[in-house]
Length: 158
Image (cartoon, rainbow, N blue to C red):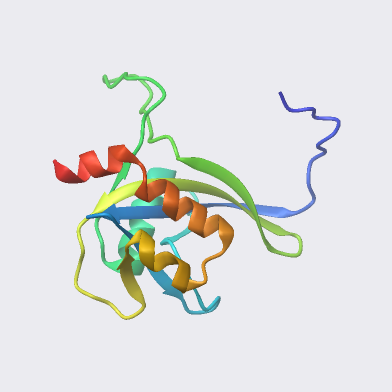
């Protein structure tokens, strides 16, 4: 339970963002972020009026050319007209400090996808290749989690 008295409302500006760890054939899709000069998963801001699921697949396609299929459970299995649409539950939600006074509420997704036409700065990496990339501890942990998720291997095999 959250203690609202111990966690006052922040004065930081906050945006919702997505990060997507796409898996294919035991490899994770990363792109070399030009401004940050590091390997990251595809991702970016959730645009006003956009659903997080749609933002996730849009960002993957824009940054890599890969058509991703989000993987993960919905909280309940109700899919009938007139009922609320069930969205994919993110693998994680985290608060990231982007700049002084600005944060992202990151919705972290796992997905599968097929390799697309190669692009500079976009590559698929096996687990053994990740240590040489200089990933942050957080990105390395998410890559490991996605690569070890059995449901992603099963989904990709279908």
